[in-house]
Amino acid sequence: MKEFENNAYFWQKVDSLYSTGDFKLKHRKGDQHKRHPSLKYPCDFGEIRTFNDEGECSMEVYRKGNGRVDALILCADILTKRFEVKGIVGLDDDEILEVLTFLNKTDFQKGVLIKRGKDTPAWAISDN
Image 1 (cartoon, helix red, strand yellow):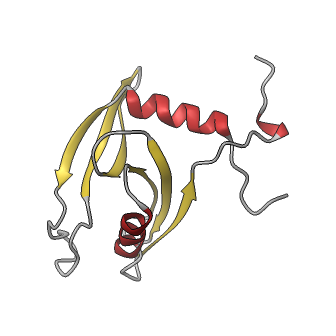
Image 2: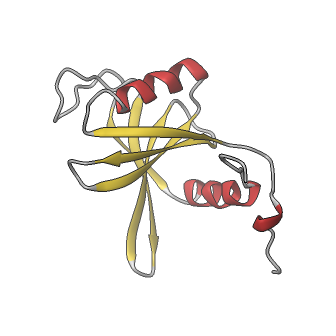
């Protein structure tokens, strides 16, 4: 098996969740991080809020302008004891690198980048 296999159907679901939610800005580019004051947000940061039968759901997003989710960053945070998924919208490669550097700056949180692809592996095809 490949180290990472992309799935076009997965990205369709991400697009659907992103496009049906409302964006709420939490921090502007250059704002200081609350827990780590030496860190400044490399771009606008907020969340997309959607609602389902069980209540509110959200996805954190680093973005410039509008568009589709071009990548996801999966973070492991030992302070909050959580995995977090953060969307990347409208950023160029240099800006994505700034976000990755920002998210990996402390010893408490590390993240990896998953870029959008167009492949559809055989295991991703459903009968429906």
